[in-house]
Image (cartoon, rainbow, N blue to C red):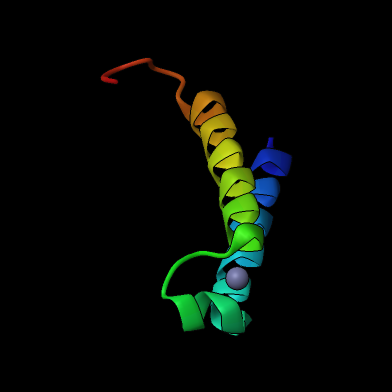
Amino acid sequence: MSSVNDALDNARFTYEQHMRTCRQCHADAAPCAVAKHLLRIYNLARRDHLRTAGGHASGA
Ligand SMILES: [Zn+2]
């Protein structure tokens, strides 16, 4: 079950590292294609994580 967490952490780390280092994202003040791709992976991982961690389906 920690593998989901790892995937989430990994996706977030990769995305954050990209945002820190990507010149294009800073130059345009908007996410580049790579950033959008990484963000989508991160969102998918987060959704998987929420679905797995959410034992009690409350709210949403
Ligand atoms: Zn970028």
